[in-house]
Image 1 (cartoon, one colour):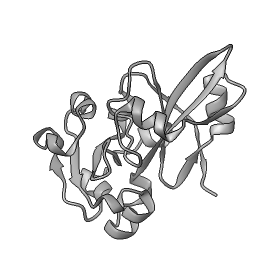
Image 2 (image 1 turned 60 degrees about the vertical axis):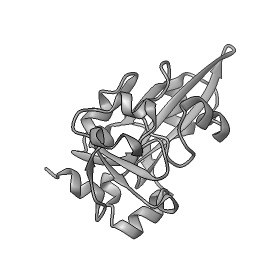
Image 3 (image 1 turned 90 degrees about the vertical axis):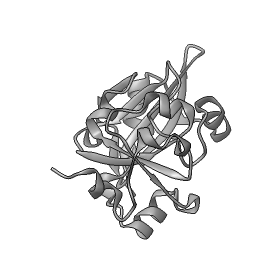
Image 4 (image 1 turned 135 degrees about the vertical axis):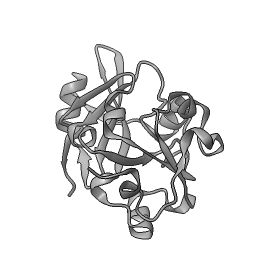
Length: 179
């Protein structure tokens, strides 16, 4: 079993509940107990940059992307959480789970506006009510995982099981090998 520091590489971890200045309000209000936060250079918010700069392991780092599709005029939105070494199977597994003919990434301006989070920092923690949260089984099974915090200047480290327990969360198989 690995601890939270494993997921953070060389980043300094702080108790998230004690550092509200590093998190947007919606994320603060939804923090799982025991969550950690790391203050980072916003230029390192993208996974590849952070992995290289801080030694964050890919198998303990997760990405969150927001997708949408329509069925019978009803829009269906979901946040997909997958390990950084994989990618969400948007045109296969996600499309089937949303029960839509076509699923695509939600326009960034909409994702940012509706989530209240920053581009490059969207996290499954604190998303709007009604959004499904599709957590890949590999993320749920990870002891501690580094994920966005809602802003580009910090990252959260939480238990994979806490992501699986978020409101609207479903543990599913949605990841495929990154190409």
